[in-house]
Length: 290
Image (cartoon, rainbow, N blue to C red):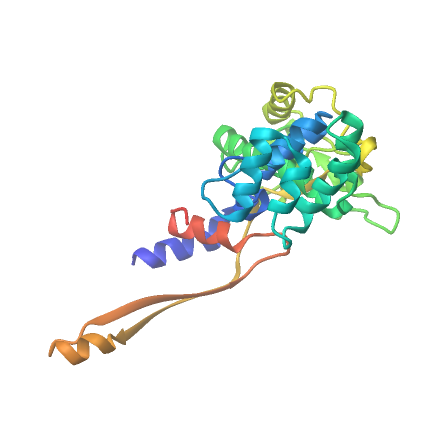
C-alpha cells in the first residue's frame, strides 16, 4: 500500500525537475558553482584559488592542492600533481609560464578546453535554477499564476526561436486555467531569456544582485564564454514506471537457520526525458537523499 501511494503520486503529480548533484561536482569544500560564480564576476585569480582548494584526505591530488594553497608555488606544485589530473596540470603549466597576474590567470583558464570552462558557469546557473524552482513551488504550489512562463508549440515553424515559444501567463489565463503546471518553465540565467513577471522574477533579480551579478551580461569575453540561457520545465513525469517486489531466500541463512530468512527487494523501471536526472526522480519517490 505504501509503495502504491508513492507510485500513484509520482504518476499524477510528477517530480520537481531539479538538476542532480552530479551537475555541481563532487567537492565538499568547493563545489563547481563557486568557481563558475567567480568566473562570471571576472575574478580570475579567485577562481584559480577555488579550483585548487583541497578536499578532505591525504591522497596525492589533495597533497598537491594543499601545497599550492599554502605556498602558491606553481613550479613546485607541478611535479606533485598526478599525471592523470590533466585539467589541473594544464592550468599549472600555463600559470607557470604566465604567472598569477590577471592576464596569467586568464591564459591559464584558456589553456583548458572550452567545454571544461563553461561547465563551471553552467554549474552556477543550474544552482540558481534549482533554488528558483524551490521558491516557485513554495510560493505558488502547483497553480499556474499570472506572470509565469509557459512553453508551447503554437505557430512554431523553422524560423521560430525558443524565446518566441515562451509566453507570459496573463491574469485572464490564470483565471480560466488555460495552462497546466507541466507547461510552466523557469529560465536558466543568460543574456537571451525572459524572466517571470511575478514574484519569481523578483526573486531572480534579488538572487543575482546578492551574488554580485546585478550588471552581469552573461558573457565572459576574455574566456570566450557566451551564456544565452535556456528554459527548463519545473515538473517532469517518469514514463513506463513499473515497480515489482522480488522476494528471495537468503542463501546464508539457509545454511545456519531452519527458518529461512526472506529478502525483499524493490525493482524499479522507468524512463525519463532527456536532461532529467534519475537520481532526482528516485529521491522524490523515496523521500530521502542518497
